[in-house]
Image 1 (tube, helix red, strand yellow):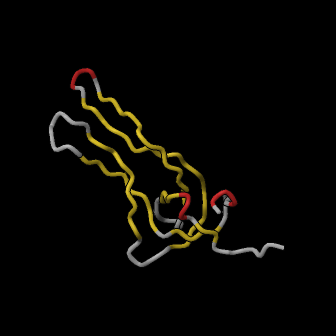
Image 2 (spheres, helix red, strand yellow):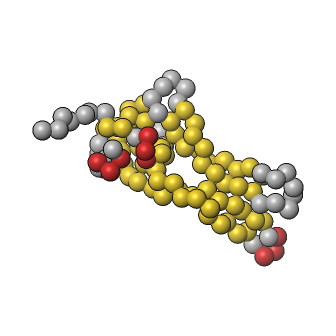
Length: 107
């Protein structure tokens, strides 16, 4: 379904992606995980316009002090960039969850 999407399509999206961080092992020496998590819209699915595609990553961050910070991607995610209206920032949505609003019958 997502392969049929193109720039400017009117789509329905059930959620948006939000970037969060967490420390999984509970030790100060363990890495922080930067992950994308699904956040449903409070009033149900929204209609928007597809404006692009993005490849996102979940991964770990090691804080190395004077040596700098190192981010290592561990997983890649395909996402769609969708504008919900003219006054708010576009949202990222899992590509598999984006649906065309108008279904065109196959001949």
